Image (cartoon, helix red, strand yellow):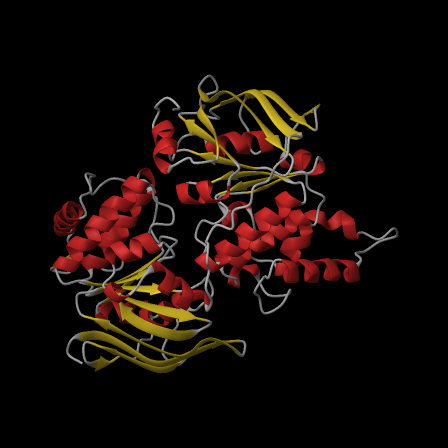
Length: 508
C-alpha cells in the first residue's frame, strides 16, 4: 500500500434515493497524474466532492485512506489540512481582490498576532514564478484572463501545501496557448512529487499527461489501467459501454436551395462605437446543409452570429435574408419568430435557467403554444411535448420535474436543443455545441445534427475543435480577425489548410 497515496473504498452516495455512486473503489499512486474518465453524469465530480469535503463524512458510505490514515472529512478545510485541494471547473476566486489576497484568503500568514502582508507578497511572488505568471501580486484578479486565473487557483492550492491536486475539466475554457502552459505546469508539479487527479473529456490531454486511467460509468468503477496499455477506443468503450465505430457520423447533405444569407455585415464594438469587430462579412446557407465556422479564439465567429441573431447591443450594418426575403432582426425574439434559433456557447449563462425544472426549461420559451383560450396553461399538451422530446433526444434525468442544474452538461445541452425544436425551425445556429460534453453525448448530438439537416433545417456550427468541423460540416468558412479568410467544400481538406487560413494565410 506504500506506493498509494489515496484509496477510496466502496463509496456509495445517494441523492433522493438515487445512487450517484454505487460501491466505487479507486486507488491513486504517489506522484502520478491519474485521469478520471467517464460520461457526463457518470459520477466523477460527485466522487471528487466526497474526497474534497464538499460532501462531508456521514453523507456517504465507504472509506477514504490518505497517506496511510483513515480520513473523516467534515468539510473542505479538513481536506485541505490533510493535503487535498480541488480546483473546480467554475473557479472560486474573488475578482475584486488582488492576487496575493486570493492566494492566502482564509489561510493568511501571521507574525506576532498580525497578518504578515510582506510574507504573503513574497510567497505569492514565489508561487507566481513557479506558475510562469508574469503578473504582480497586487493585480486584481478581474484583470486576468481565464488561463491565468486557473493558475492562480493552483498557486492557492500549493500555498496550503497540497500533496494532491484535483482538477475538474481544467481546460474547458482555455485557449490552445493556455492549455499548453497548464500542461507544462502540471508536468513540473508531478516532477516535484505532487499527485494529481485529472478529470477531462479530452482524450488527447489524458494520453499526454496521465500515468493511469480510471473509468467510471453509471456511478460504478469500471476499472483502472496504465495509460501504456490503453488506446482511445479502449477508454471510449469503457466510458459508454459500447463501441463507437466512428465518432463523427458524417453524412453528405446535398442541396442547392439557399435558405439563409448574410450580406455585407459589419459589427461595431459596444464600448467603442467607431471600432469594427466584424468587417463586411457575406455568406449563404443552403437548406439541409451543415455550414462549419472555424478560426482561432478571437477570430469573431461568436460575435458575428450573436449580432446576426440579435444579441449584440452595439451598432451593426448589413442585410439578412431568409428564403430570399430580407428580414430585420433586432432582438433574439425576432429571430425565433422567423424560425431561426441559436444554441449559445455558454449554456449556463444564456441557455438554461438553473432554478427551473427540465420541463420548464423546455417549454418556457414556447409558452404561447400552451395557453388556453380563456385562461391558464394546457398542462397535458405541455407534458406530452416535454416527454416526447425527452425520449427523442435521450435526455437522462430523474424526471421532467428535476432541476436542470443537477443534469450533466450533455443533458443540459439536449434540453436547450429541445426548447428550440419545439418550434418549427428553418435555421439552427450552434455555437460550440459539444464543449464540455463527453464522447457518448457528443455522438448523440452529432446524430441529432444529421437528423435535423435531413429534415431540411439549415445548420450553422461554430467549433474550435478542427476535427469536429472536418467530421461534420459540408462546407467550412474560416475567419481571421473579424473577416472571412477562406471557404472550403469539405472534401479531401486537412487540418493544415484550415489552420493556414485561420492564422491569416491565403486560402490554397
